[in-house]
Image (cartoon, rainbow, N blue to C red; front, side, top):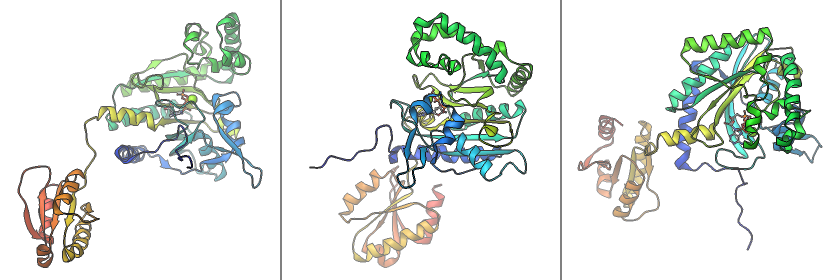
Amino acid sequence: MSEKIQAIRGMNDVLPEHAHWWDFFEETVRDWLAAYGYRTIRLPIVEQTALFRRSIGEVTDIVEKEMYTFEDHLNGEHLTLRPEGTASCVRAVLQHNLLYPGPLRLAYSGPMFRHERPQKGRYRQFHQVGVEALGFEGADIDAEQIAMAARLWRKLGISGVRLEINSLGDSASRARHRGKLIRHFEQHQDILDEDAKRRLHSNPLRILDSKNPAMREMLECAPKLLDELDEASRAHFESLQVILGELGIGYEINARLVRGLDYYNRTVFEWVTDRLGAQGTVCAGGRYDGLVSQIGGKPTPACGFAIGIERILTLIQEENSGVSPEAGDVYLVHQGQAASKFAVTAAEFLRDNDFSVILHCGGGSFKSQMKKADASGSRFAAIVGDDEAIAGEITLKPLREEAGQFRMGLGEAVAWLRSQSI
Ligand code: ATP
Ligand code: MG
């Protein structure tokens, strides 16, 4: 016997009982993006490997060990399944010259791929919604994006996600900080893990991002980037905090927040919950003023964030446990030759009038069909026997309450169903 074919580890099917939460999320996101004037862009899932190497940075978890990279055997091109969306978005903006008329607010969503160890909240194919604002320099856009995320949590009914912010300053401030940081790490060589030792000189800032508990104490007393900020970055950070204050958005400054990607500068932020264990960051972003020029465009300030959809959905489902998915309106059962023929017409007529109808298929007694109708979660059964068919009528029976049953013509049935406020 051949072996069973299964999904790839870390790449999940979304089964119908969960899919409706994805629908709910996507519908909410659509309105939310429109409310802030973000327009959708749809991007390819495969890009040239060089795009990610150049933008995310060589010495990062993603580029060093998480990318699904392969050679196209037909033409030898080096390709990668996108691990995130910002690089592709900026690539598209430059390729199509979208910045020509002026600044731009864009949003994308879809699957991302990273070869990580799968665990709760961490998958190899996962999904993000991301927004990018290009061409805006002031802290007002950073604040707008943070307020935007806060509004989404409210719309989704999620509570208990807290905001952490930090500033990475400009490249000169990072260079000053870097020297001090390396000295600090060198004094604690014995505590550094393998990753940290390897990054000590190539990318020491990234060591601050480590989740290794053995290094926590040593990281907590490391020199802070905030103490090295240049004047303009300091003013930017202060102005962000003033606007957040005006908007009534609470935050905490986390001096160790550095983000896993190289292209960030100035503002970085994360929304974090305690309810998802180690995978507690549900949304992460910040400013990346250097990226556009790094991949070949004119210097353009920019700010964006990405939401991890699986992690958010886990929170939504927790908050809504016990809420059953929205059921259909009508399950139509039928028996007899004339009845089965009329059932098709009746079902189409109800759908013409915006009701959802599951038409029973596969025969069986009325009793067994009614069991299926009950199990379907529909609010009403519509029953058609040959009698009804000849009269051009259906019998409607509420399934969620004791209320008898009512036989009527199709037009009347539509009016009656509407009066039941469905
Ligand atoms: P982490 O520190 O958890 O690895 P990250 O810094 O790699 O996160 P980003 O690249 O900033 O994450 O991605 C933004 C968001 O996407 C994360 O905050 C998280 O919610 C989600 N995310 C990232 N990687 C995964 C993954 N492998 N599985 C599920 N969600 C993910
Ligand atoms: Mg990661």
